[in-house]
Image (cartoon, rainbow, N blue to C red; front, side):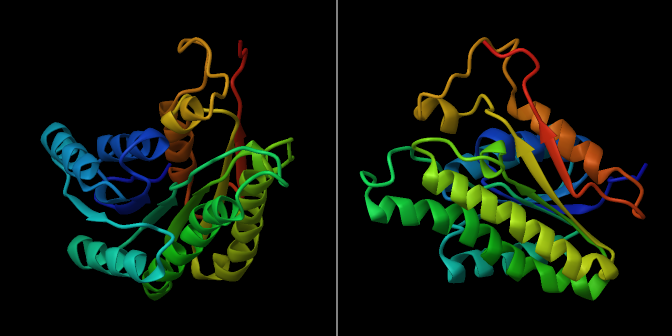
Length: 240
């Protein structure tokens, strides 16, 4: 298994949910972190906790992934501070559900901008550093919603389906440069995003938690460099 200690990772949507759990899991492995989210106070609080608890370097950049100039500046700044980007986790995402004919087109487009274009902008900013060092791992947090649609989910499902396809295409482009690309496809996770959209999150002991997805990410990253997981689904065993 690969040793992750002293590697560097950039995580989007790091202030809450899966992104926060991934940051803690990586810090526990000794990985130095660059954290991106829209809310600076969330990032500062998390950075302080992780530095004190794990003794790793943690740098932050407040940015909206859907704004190309902002995310490019954030990634470049974090690279300068970290010295390299070995791991990129595209986790930032939003969701609103409603019938296609009834949802505000601006809201529909906003979901695509954050969930798809945000991952594209972030990857495009970080990829040259990985290509230069001839190594890296990119994890895109997609969803089972990208594998099959459901009523009221047209925007969210479309964004996650496109992210899965983007992951596949990028993988074919960069694998010869020793860069591994993985699409993670969890079912419903007990996060603020789920609860704010009234998704059934059930009993905490039975429902998937952000830490479960983070554990999957760590297991994927620790595989020998000669192999990678192209896509990985994770489901709640016995949901309520």
